[in-house]
Image 1: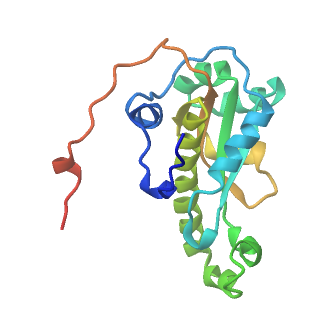
Image 2: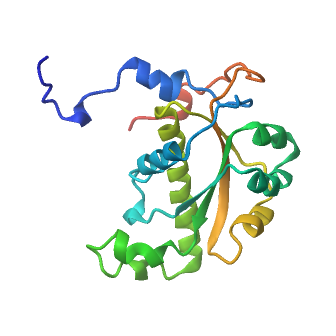
Image 3: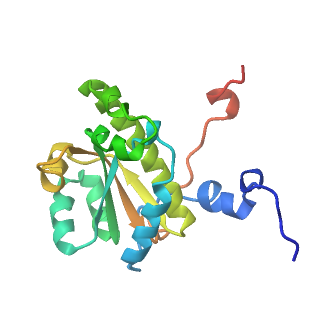
Amino acid sequence: MAFDSTPVRDRPLADAALGQLFTEARTRNAWSDRPVPEALLRKLYDLTKFGPTAVNNTPARFVFVTSPEAKARLIPLMGEGNRAKTLQAPVNVIIGMDVDFHEHLPVLFPHAPGAKDWFADEAGRREAAFRNSSLQGGYFLMAARALGLDVGPMSGFDPAGVKAAFFAGTTVEPNFIVNLGYGTDENLFPRSPRLAFEEAAVVL
């Protein structure tokens, strides 16, 4: 077999891979009882962490809720319509944002020693934390699908309650929650329409 010397960035993914990540992937509302091993969760994070963020600030923090005890704390904090599927999913992931992410910049962005001082303003720091943790959440969803997992992102929960139950005494606040595992077709809605290029984009 001949070695392909084309740089990876110049080799588009095959249609099957694009289907797994985008065109055939679905948000799942029901889940099999197939477990997700911790080793796979660690691999998932190790892929996610390479996604780009502003000055490599990587503010996202991840709580993998797997135990019955942790689920018992989370389920009452979910919106009523999200409780059953959150209970059924083998893993629930609370994606949080550290609003004091700048404390890590001396390590994460070492070639700019003064980077921490760029985020002295709390309001600006909070905005950066939200934007970049949301980016990381998107990377997380794609990394999960790349590893053969299904996802169900949700925003229907009690943020103050989740903060108190899982991030008390820290500078981390919840952004959104993802159900994770191996989905089934139960309660799977028909795929919703998407906007056409001409409705959502412009080339200038």
